[in-house]
Length: 375
Image (cartoon, rainbow, N blue to C red; front, side, top):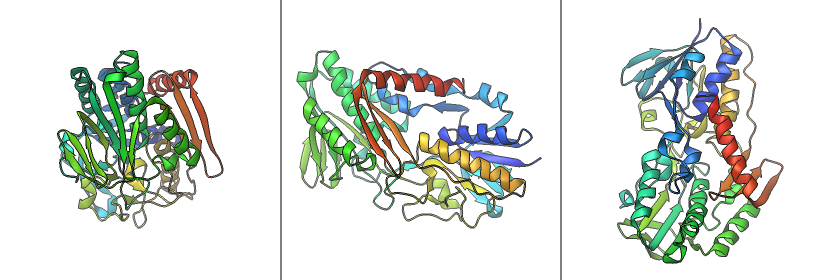
């Protein structure tokens, strides 16, 4: 019986479990993560408005693991040995015949004063912090922005900030408080959201102008204070700062010989294999993959990569060619708590569908459909 170890319990990891089990019912699968739970990060945008609570987004994975006949090892990965055949963790070593790294990425928090900013995709606590701070404010300035990893163009999460921006505008209007708040969007990128496509950038900036969201773009960030965002283009006063930094690789990668990209992620080929390591694969935010510079890695893209990685790993274990590549696709609904805009991009097409109430409900329907397989 072949032993497969998966690091992580996010999108890519869970999809890898399902794909592995579908391909081979006899695999001995071990999942390594601190807790047997999955947090549905796309739903964090709805926490400040009360549309979702933290518990709505936290899924207990123990029933899913039992159905999939998976062993959960409650620990954190700390390193690798034996050319990838042994995963070192905070609770002992785990031997494997195949390894899939799906442990996500790490936000780059080097800017001075970054502790004054909420980083929403860090999890439920951060989204609840934004919610609670908004409730305390009777008015003022909310500054929201993002930056990237200059050495890894794809290691950025700008999409959620757009959703928090438009969601906040709609929330304050529903509460009858919008006129008391100034909302400012900031980023060092001159064309924010360019990964979504040129049409999407123009549409997003136009929508910001339409609803009165100010923009401060193209200026390098210098740091933060409790009451301001500091940039080379001037300071922005702020009563609440929401900021998504760029991403790099997990710290435990430093205790391995895994090949790394210039941006600190694990290097991968078009089949999600880690070069130089036999039967070691990487998916999602942990990896640096060949493809267009707009290619995302989280959520939907992580699922697509995980399916390819699982299929290739099973093929290798059965001494067959590992020749499955992943489809490159960016598909998202930029939601504003009661309406949404669809952006779809492939290597051949880039479509932007105007904001609609129907797309908001489609996003909610997808959430239900996606989570039901793990509940």
